[in-house]
Length: 178
Image (cartoon, rainbow, N blue to C red):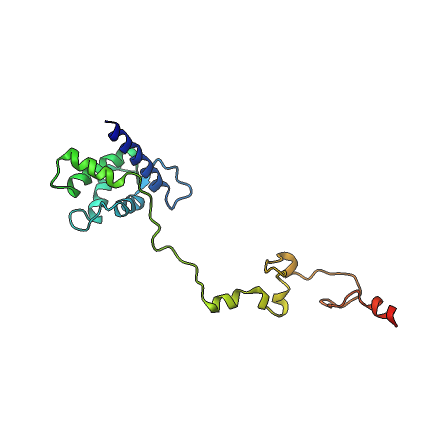
């Protein structure tokens, strides 16, 4: 009995993880159809033979409320019961239910196929701010961090020198030596 309670607790944790996957506004109390299909795929409930993605979609539609687009945790357990008899045909109803609960318990959404950062020499060369020239060079400090507004706009300085003149303030030193 204690194992059954533990599996249901792990099942609840998995439900919440899949419920919030991909949606920053999700509360974790309701699971949408896309995340239900992802749960079934990531937990190996869909095997392509006895249980297909079509079966998963049909079960989702069957257990949800008529006007709803999501299922609650209780409806989730009913959906797993529906799929258990299809996925584990040779087992009794209770054994099949425990088997499908074990498949889902403590699983999280997999992030396969996530876009990788490209590390090519051409990209490195184009994004290295130390190699920039002209006005683009002015937009970054020596460490490569952007200067923000200061690097984009010309700030008017009333020093008497022409804008972007590098040796501003050195005239007095030059004349002092003569």
